[in-house]
Image 1 (cartoon, rainbow, N blue to C red):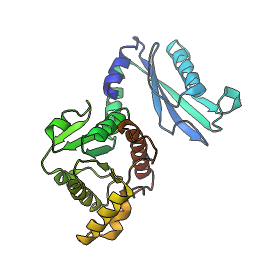
Image 2 (tube, one colour; image 1 turned 180 degrees about the horizontal axis):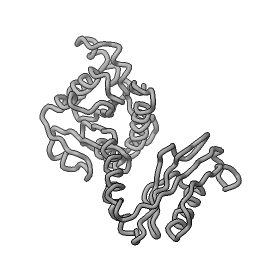
Image 3 (spheres, helix red, strand yellow; image 1 turned 180 degrees about the vertical axis):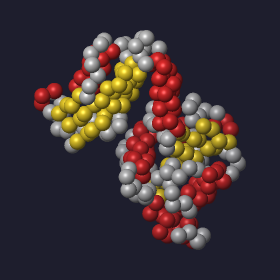
Length: 277
């Protein structure tokens, strides 16, 4: 279920009094979530999270007390032994009742957040590509799968946008800045064309290619021989994922997904502007 659908389901748990928006308005030291993280609490439901644990339990209890008639006020919590949490930081939460007349406003907020999710482009819909698309489904990213083989593309998991083309490399120029590009096709020659096109850009969060150190060395040799800028090779992640003994597609996908999210977070952080290397 996508977040907008999940929010619509949450709305149905709200009574005539609406629900409470709990937001992190200050976060100092080590905290589960950052400033502006938020969650919604109704009498019988929850949507989103401010970090879980005792912090979230306290927030839910206060939110439901507000729905029951208590006065809304801020809640300041030191995340230490006093509440059984060992983060060591300090969080301040605000609480606001959202009546049914403002439900559309919150729906718009959820939609806006979804629209700003970064894109991950998977070139190749084979075993690892499909496993990676599945692994990314639960994460706050928009997944695109590009294939030249229709039968493989049709196996792409629900939720990923499909692109069938005989020239996958032609799509690279139109990818949104800040996206991650992961190349996992069935053809090394095609890999070369796609990766070369991606390396020509300086505004992608990550350019990754499945393969071995030998494949990387072969790619680098061909790239330079054909006039490629050697400096651009520093942007290429190959091999992708952690080097572990288990090479089942689902296991590879788990490590690559973590690598992608790290690169995207690094790109989007204040001052971040270069692909992770």
